[in-house]
Length: 114
Length: 113
Image 1 (spheres, rainbow over the protein chains, first blue to last red):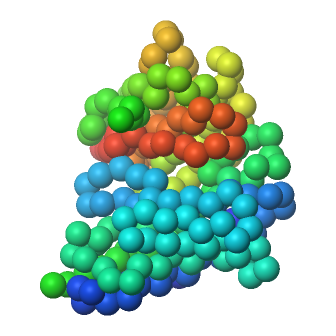
Image 2: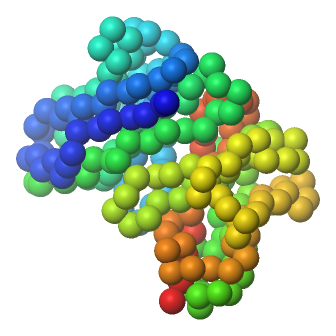
């Protein structure tokens, strides 16, 4: 079945450090991939997405590339800020499915210190 | 920018009571979803809804749960007789197309005492 595996957190970084959060997936069909972010006390916000192999999603300095050969969609940012402190969720939708539910990873807590 | 809204933001109830969680999806969206997140755990799918009927439901969505679109704007989740383990954050989401990007509301935190 479809599933998403994310690196365990928490991740603690200093401001301006480089961020990588690993995400790999298993899908029976042909998935679209997403990163959602949850800031403290708030709901889930779409951060970026990619719908086909080799696509790069980007937003607010974050990037992730859809790698079909390694079934991965790792999130990266070159220089994190304190305001990036949040929980990050990798997710997929299997576009070959008639149903369209999102499968989420467990989430990675990021804390950035000044 | 259009957004999904949810009410209430926090609901406290006694075990065995009925609760109704409300959502207003983005106006031109046709697909609606409920997810929940128990504290510290992953976000779990509950149910999807399209064309006034359930498209899919998970094993969590048992007979105690129901969904409804009572009018042209609201989408509700009802829990008939709440249990302690129903305590969670409940998120509503909507999408314009099937298997398309889903946009989430801010959530309703349900606390069952």
